[in-house]
Amino acid sequence: MRLSGGGRSGQTLQAPKGKKTRPTSAKVREALFDVLGKRVEGARVLDLFAGSGALGFEAMSRDAGSVVFVDSDAAAVMAIRRNAVRVLPDSDRWRVLPMTAIRALRKLRGTFDIVLMDPPYQRGAAEELTMLMQRGLLSELAIVALEHPSVKETKIPPSMRVFKKTKYGDTALTFAMARTGEQTLPEDTAEEVNRQGSAASRPAASRRRRSRK
Image (cartoon, rainbow, N blue to C red; front, side, top):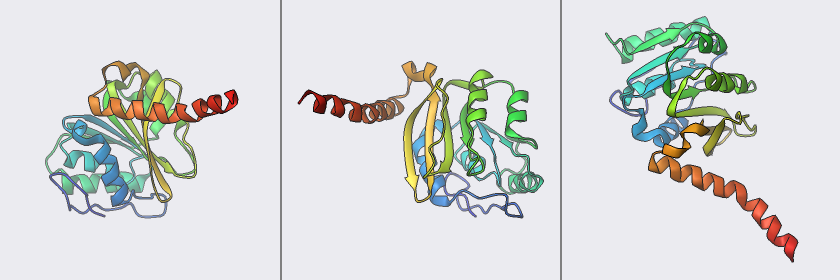
């Protein structure tokens, strides 16, 4: 597995031993960071269910300010630490929390600009998304990027709004942000929110038009 972009593009990463971790494909990683774009630069990033840490290291390769990796699996934590030595030698821009996502969210302080989430495929992350909001861990314009099966809709709490969804075979990416940040969205993200909102309302409008005939 190699980093797909940024200053450390092509750098190899070690995957955790065993079958518990399912690394995100290079195609999906590239698509995810194409959406995030320049927002990664200088951002404080939280990588939940980090696995090998590939998503967090992609962010670091693209000049993220800092990354907190979270995973409860011992093999994953070991892989993250080994990968950090390869990608970020002598860097203090990262740390790893060897614990569950819920426990980490209870302990963390401050806010994050980008949250990357790749939970076990059939598990979902509704509880973690809700806790992110309840604990005030998202900055005003924070973006949450969630990877999940394309055949399964992910539950987003009412306090958040989805602004983009993409699918790549059996994998989907859902991008969301806190509703409180919508008033000061960057232009490109605002366009995505408006586009998604229009698409969501179109079927209802069509039904109303048909009912008048």
